[in-house]
Image (cartoon, helix red, strand yellow):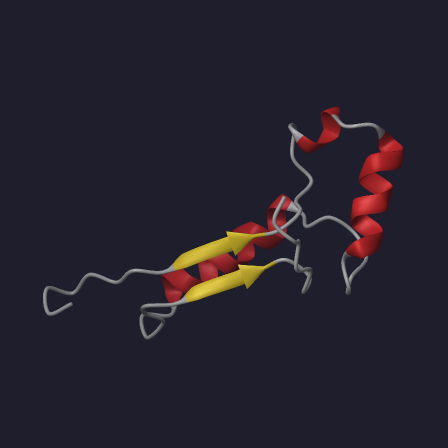
Amino acid sequence: SNDGSRCNSILPGLFDAPLSQRAPHHALDALAAQVPFPKRFGLPDEFAQVVKAVITCSYVNGENIRLDGAIRLSPR
């Protein structure tokens, strides 16, 4: 906008987080195997790297950034 505000969003896929760690290991392994590349859950540090890049590059504006290893989960 003209007031200097920027609006961006990060759309995370499957991430290693406390909630995901509650699931059975076989279920987590099956989900991770569906991620095209790399075949694993995202890491909190990787999310932080994208946040830092968006904040430090003032030309990024109006973007939705998928951070999901290219997985496309179907609706339930």
